[in-house]
Image 1 (cartoon, rainbow, N blue to C red):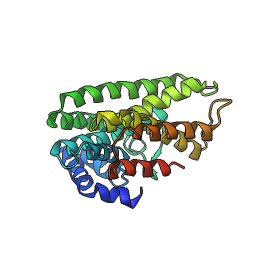
Image 2: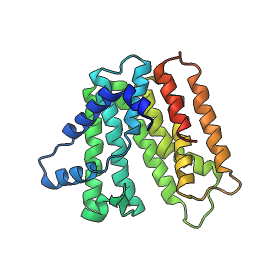
Image 3: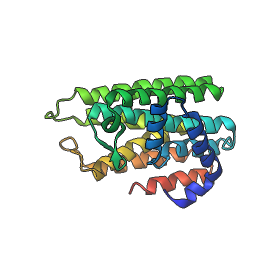
Length: 250
């Protein structure tokens, strides 16, 4: 991620990392072992960054509530990864053996549940009842997206509508919530950014797209929609940071 963006939210992002580690501490040795192991290979913290940048637009960047919500978004994302690896029977995650391949499916599912429960606790602690409702709806959407993908025969040809619906539920719904939970007017940006992000990721991974779909054209469509949604916002360094995020998808 662009250093300019990370520097913009450097202090609250550091607080998110600290909050994340503290919230996941467990007296159960196996749980703590898995948490520590997975923490060695952390992601880019993209989802909490979306929340923090949205909070910057609302001038709530440095509030304790924002830190709790941003932490919960990263925790929710990682909870989904534990479950996804079990469902997809993946054996690696971020360049190392996945939790399910090391400790088995049962332990991985329970660790995913633990992350999800801790995320919901953080949202409760934030005092934002509206956020609790929004995240609950997002978890439903993510689960439905995973089931839609699971229900498809591996040899069947996905329609464009089905592909877009699946990535909308699995990826874009969470990124939309990451933005909306701190700034409701950023919900549309989050959704379109999430769609563009997943399409770009699928292109990089060499995923098969539905027949007749030109991936680059589809990517540009959602990038344009995301940038268009920013026009309603007053000019600020936080709005410009989102434009930088869009350029990173080129």
